[in-house]
Length: 215
Image 1: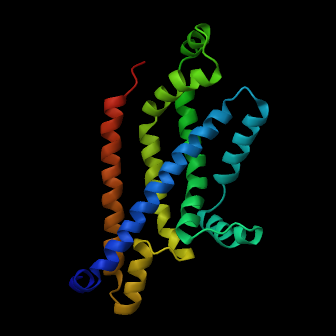
Image 2: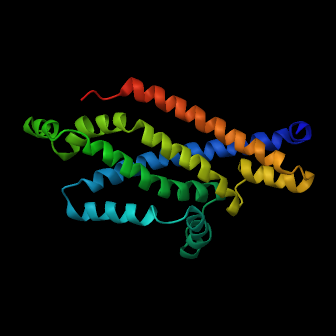
């Protein structure tokens, strides 16, 4: 273990930073995409509802590793080429957005019909109801599910090494190939993921308590 930190600390830190960046970008992208798709799912416009439903049904049933391969090696065939980080972030965003959409839609469904009718009675259109009534309450009521999405994205980022993104898992794998450190190296990786997940869970619990919607 001492050799791992004394000799390979820069590589470990680079891998950790890559994992954090990839998780943060993918989660923010998932939040934006999931919000848009949640709006589609409850839209009065039938084609938009269909788009939202097809998107969710499609991406919740695709393994991340398959999507990584398709985005990285398939898109160039139609003229779309991205760097490896972008390919990984895009793949994770597409999958995370589907789960985020369903989490937000659950929060929207928890808003009472009376509030929606009251908003319409004062002249708010569909987007006004979304902005001022539904989304603010939906986000506050699904903090923990969104934290779960974040943790899922964090853990899924370990697959980014399949396409060559040097995240923490891939860095440690390469170090292990050189130094033959065995399970100790992977134990350090697991510990790092556990710590980040626990921190995210703690922040989520505090936000949930602070923002809890009183019904």
